[in-house]
Image 1 (tube, rainbow, N blue to C red):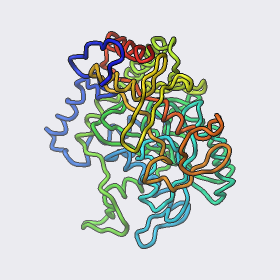
Image 2: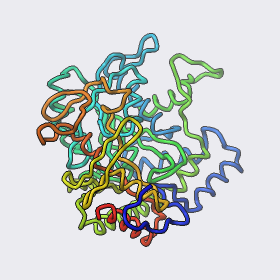
Image 3: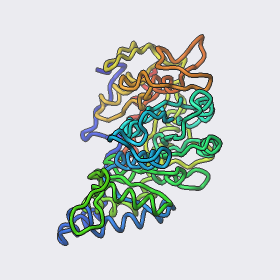
Length: 426
């Protein structure tokens, strides 16, 4: 239990990392689905959110699906078939093909590559945006020149260096799958994320900036691709009176009830972003005298500020050792570490979280390729060699954490969280 100095009184009600913020209109559209008996995977709510989101994001077509992971899976299937043809023997269109993937992300970004038989190769992170390092990506093509697919994610709502990545992709004739699950509403050089890839995906999971309780969406400018995804997501049923199936399909279509929640949320996207941005800058101001930095905001982009994160300066880190599931740290005067800070936040009934553990550090992917800016490698035992950073993702993971970023958190509650973080460095 956190005991440094005197503890602050815990909140009576928990302050969450990021919980759904409902407004009432969601219930209206859910009730409409109930009263009209459109409770399955067709109905007006689905039709409307597909239309509205295409207009809002700025793409030609959208397909509402059961999750962001489902959208990513069908994006991988599309990419694999375009690059290598249809799968044989059920092995997946990417069977035995290497795919370059963002390293610092949730595993839902990467797992669909494996669903389709691909082999993820992880590209190290860069400090400027906490996203895929373009220099490491270019280096990866020197080692794996045959790769034709890149999967990028935008961490915590901040876009990566998309222009540089697209130049590299075009140079090597590679396709891009863009995972914009965390970045809906964020822009890069004035253009919305979810429109930069050859195939693009967003999420409406319960903690995202627009919530459906579940659900996701595939985004594209290709009517042909939209129609393929729509067909695959409804068990690949053919246009016949009976149930005719000529290829593998999936039960991936969004429910009209969940679409009602999304429909009621959409008009509040800008309001949610504004609230998240205010939270970020209150943290930035409140923590400015500590040896920490907030997650970066590159000048080329306007994030959606989904989660506010911080990273402890290297020379202000107390001793901390993480195993696979447990951690040990020793508090030191003037120093702290993510796990002490998270414990302190928890002691006042608030929820923080470690940043995403990089994929190359995960036991399931530890033997996969991992490419840094200066070379290739596998999982490291330390982020530094002779004092120099050799593994940026590991470094950010070891020093970073996500702060409570719930829209419903009051200014007074955030001030108390800032105070408890400050006490960790006393």
